[in-house]
Length: 331
Image 1 (cartoon, one colour):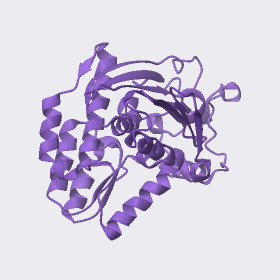
Image 2 (cartoon, helix red, strand yellow):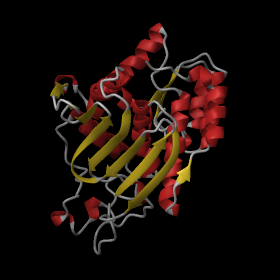
Image 3 (cartoon, rainbow, N blue to C red):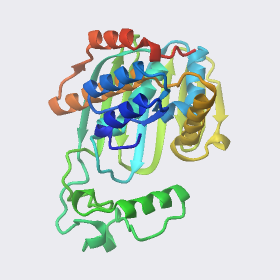
């Protein structure tokens, strides 16, 4: 299911009624109500309902999770999940469309449940620019705009080129044009933001999203009482530093980083197919998807109001009890 985020419910529920195995592109939905409708449909179906939180399948993140579970870091105290992205994006709010990935990753690594969220964000760069747009192909400033996107130019990378060709087929005028101006388009999103998430097991986590970075990558830092981890998904590297001995262990997973999202995309699809054929439990549950949406919505509310937002624990507890069949107990 790869419809726009707000339109997930109908095709998911219909597919489950027809006993089809379903792979759901993140986020699960855009409202808690829609998440619960999907969960109800999944509870009444024997089909596999697989949520596409591919960051859990990145070789780097898998190793980080393994190190935490094996107590290599001691008690985890803080987690940093940073996403740096060069380019623009038109669509749903970044706190949901992009950040749900990382909120889920932080929850998975922490092993806890979110208690509260405080977020701040701003549109610092892609503000109104006189004479720009409305599309790159029409823009009078194209020759000197560093963000110019030539939709007619073939790309070397097969994935990017396939996407470019799909954009051509879906090309529309107005705000849905694939080369809409990043500066002068109508938008209610931001280009940089930070969220602080407090978990119920005395772990705090921060998430930074910035679409103005010089390169695209995700970086993770986890600090425990015995050791700390510093990782980069683009390079496929992990540095583990022992706190008391200052020993530094470098883990190089670059040979396993094949494809997008730190090598995760082909691995998660292979896992989905394997479970469809052989049976098993998806690494990400419906409840995980709901929790990520809940944190994302809280972050958006916090950024809008300037206040810390508490997560409704009674709501989370009720959901876990009602849909516990979909919750996977990790190692």
